[in-house]
Amino acid sequence: MIKEDLSLLEGLHTPFYYYDMDALEGTLSAMKAAAQAAGIAVHYALKANCDPRILKAVRAAGFGADCISGAEITLALESGFTPEDISFAGVGKSDKGILTALKAGVSVINVESVQELLVIEHIAKKYSLKANIGIRVNPNVDTHTLRYITSGMQANKFGITETDFPRVIEILRRSDSLVFKGIHCHAGSQMDMRSQAYRRVCRKVASFCTFFEEAGLKVEVINLGGGLAVNYEDPSEMPDFEGWMDSIREIFSESGARIITEPGRSLVAGCGTLYSRVLYIKENDLKTFLVIDAGMNNLLRPALYGAYHKIENLSADARAWKVPGLEEVTGENQVYEIVGPVCESSDTWGKERRMRLSVRGDLLAIRSAGAYGQVMANSYNMREPAQTVYSDKIEEAIKEEYV
Ligand SMILES: *Cc1c(COP(=O)(O)O)cnc(C)c1O
Image (cartoon, rainbow, N blue to C red):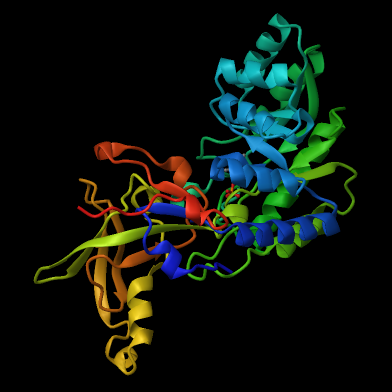
């Protein structure tokens, strides 16, 4: 899936994020085909990666946008998404963000608490605007994903639980400023959409829809969020878009509502790689460290939630094939702890990683870095940001300068 020319990438200033625009196109097309066949709309979750070239490609694929802040709404509008194709989610929307959404006239604001609903009503009234409302429900189903990225449990901060529905319905019924549109649910991340757990979530959402309809509130939109898993062990594997659409269709086959999904990770993880150079090799009695020039400030996921990223030493692989007979001697028989330069022990890329013998200057590829990578970058330790390199604009990238 990822194509890379080592001779072009080797001389570039590291660390850098590389986006394979063909791989991105391939993934977007696969999602589009699956969604169209199922008659399901796609709103890309901007928070996964809001790089301007990526947004342009997503827009060109005909997808809408799922935004999580006022700034994301503004960026989506600037990137050509229409207000009708924008939804607004988030457990802690600021007053300013709500006003931005109301003024833009986004298709739906997905509300996460009773108090938030009242605040939106207040702001809408004050500015004589109407607010399109979706109710983000908490299905209270354990989707067995990573501890940190499950969001559909009652113990979790996201969504409105069943016990609050009567109060929500009462507010929606009496309000002139709030226009009820439908139900929203985002149950977690890295989910297997063919699993029983996901089907349970969908059935819960379907029963909640019935509850609202029986209370006289017509559900025009059912938004099932994102969360489709990507295979971090095998970055070349296409996410199971079809399986996802099948599961939804199976449960909502009778529904006349417009069904929306909000994939983030599954659309963009695979097209991105973070490249880094080996700075030092350092050995003690217990292990051998590979100190590389990309750190947790460039890609936070391993440090933040112990996330796994596949790492390949491209230079060592190329060396092995160049010299006949060397392949056998330098198989992946070295065990390294790969660490970054930041002054935190959690700045660790991987423990006990098997690799070929690595030397200073080798170029490493940290795979599946397109989602929740560059968007979470920070400048801790006053480190400079990783540059962005697009596969069709490599010539514009900054070259490495050695001292
Ligand atoms: C994060 C998020 C998504 C996207 O989740 P992925 O796991 O990246 O697909 C979709 N909807 C909402 C409301 C979110 O918060």
